[in-house]
Amino acid sequence: MLKILFVCHGNICRSPMAEFIMKDMVEKAGLSGSFHIESAATSSEELGNPVYPAARKELASHGLDPSGKRARRISRGDYDDFDLLIGMDSWNLKNMERAFSGDPRHKLYLLLDFTDKPGEIDDPWYTRDFGLCYRQIEAGCRGLLKKCLSDSRSGLI
Image (cartoon, rainbow, N blue to C red; front, side):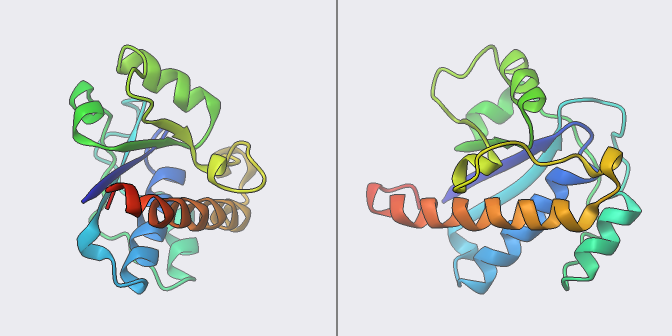
């Protein structure tokens, strides 16, 4: 089973969107039993809060329901517990590297690294464009799933 943790600053917008988009993709591919997918924050500002209303609305417009999701912060143990830790932007990666004392097993990536347009997922908290954020995350998740499936021959899933 491949364990993936999506990470953003507060775990109320981008990373939970990625969590639910990826869960939907693997379910539709009939691969739910091969993946464990979660999301977390690098900060403690939003701990315990639900997915931000505008992010919930965007997910709902695509038939996804993040009910019950509450923000949590990454822990040192997450590095051992997950196979891939996927940040939304370079600031997230820096904070993860600090929290995990580096990345000795090369588990940290940016989500858009798995697309033909590497870069950062725009933070809709500031841009207010949750539609663009959804499309960026969907592209990243599609590329990540494709990579995971191509790597399945090496035993990842």
